[in-house]
Image (tube, rainbow over all chains, first blue to last red; front, side, top):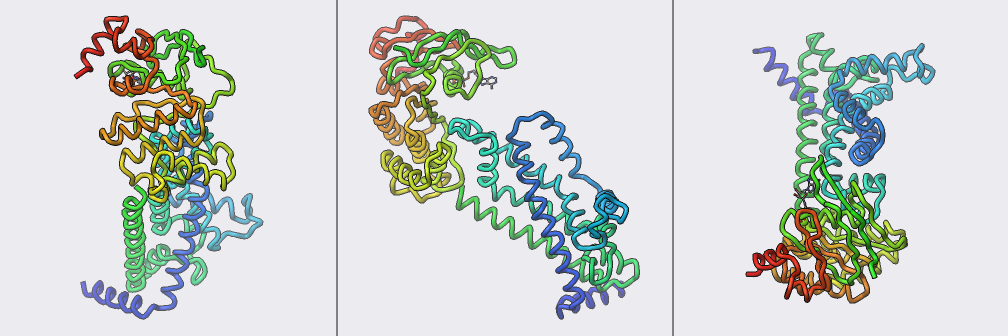
Length: 234
Length: 227
Ligand SMILES: Nc1ncnc2c1ncn2[C@@H]1O[C@H](COP(=O)(O)OP(=O)(O)O)[C@@H](O)[C@H]1O
Ligand SMILES: [Mg+2]
């Protein structure tokens, strides 16, 4: 009990004074996960929209595949990306292993199925509503997918958010491909894991609190945005 | 003269026949398809517009005929009323400046210049339906299909929509509409197609249809629907 309360106190003061080491870790975490989310949206949203609107062989299996991959275990993704990027691997020559870029790649792969599958659901609903009208106006399927992506932009923020939430909170993938190197590839989750095992609870707790705050903040912002959008755009 | 001909057109879903061997020539400038709920009016209209593929028979179109459709419930994109019309014009390949001008003209013709900059989805049902009509009209189709265009509107909006339909027809666009409102069919149509159970029961000039329907089915329908 005593240990927890002193740790909490120390954690609070770390956050309050804006401890440089702490802030560097938080910043890297946000940078890596935000970039991964951006990339996953860039690829996942068009793929999701085409899965919803398109008609091509293999569409059904692909939908099932992306749904299934939503539950991809982070450590397995980490392992796969590790094999790809390791010196002997096919992409070894780029020397990306144990860099933030490797972490971005791993997280992008991890959340791509989430963004894709959620986008597909959103666009499928929109397609149900708009399909006949768009066809009547002569919009091709590709054009329809583009139009509906833009039209559903606020509902789609949920998909991006779910991806970001998963990316920023996962440990396994970044641990393996980042290596948890001090002041280079150490992010919030890997630091929490390491410091807890070393017994340095204040730093771990401080990061835990910040992590929770970040996730809450982003979700609240998105919720408010969607509410406002619904009133404004109908 | 029939500009749209249907030959033995049929549509079945899961072995249930929805449209059965429909053979007809649509020749009038303003045609109303009427009949009880579930008769297959909307389905027939979708077949004619090409949104559904017939399971048997075929349609004959003049190759170059341009067509548009307005649905029972207007479907708008999350943008302004004006931009919704511009979008349709853009799809037809008009340049941006021309899209803008034509969209403004179309809104003016349905009396909605004042709401051009409003969000389309936040407009009333009646206004949205008029935007939908303006969107279809802006493309200057030779045929316009209308599926129960006033079914979910209040009487005031319905009148306004009927006025717009008359104007579109006066501009030379052929109208094919479904309705279960006999008064509306009487006010608008030159020719009536009476549909029941997916079959065309009769096709008659409007005057004759309302005074002396040829079939008992149509006679009963008129009696039931006339207050
Ligand atoms: N996609 C579909 N699958 C199965 N049945 C359908 C489908 N669309 C319409 N139907 C059926 O076909 C009949 C005609 O429908 P519809 O054309 O909407 O009639 P109306 O417009 O005259 O009220 C109805 O019995 C309806 O239940
Ligand atoms: Mg109908």
